[in-house]
View 1 (tube, rainbow, N blue to C red):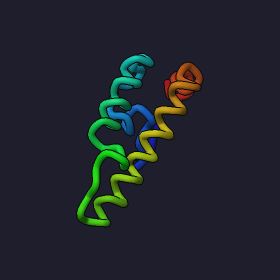
View 2: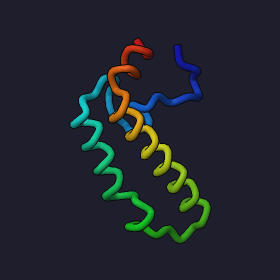
View 3: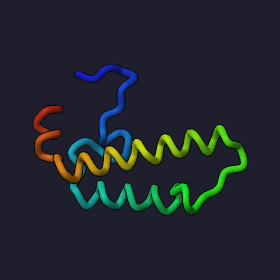
Length: 77
């Protein structure tokens, strides 16, 4: 069971639990197109910092799910 304040890797990526690898890739690519730090510049440094943190969380979740999806799915059942 998950704590209320902790997001699963699926929640971080904004996809349904047990999304396919293709759905995971699509969600990550879409996020990168609209929010990648090299593509978008923010005027407010606080917003930029928050978006950088979000980008790194998305990247970590993406890498983890692509490499370990079956293991993660079995652990979160």
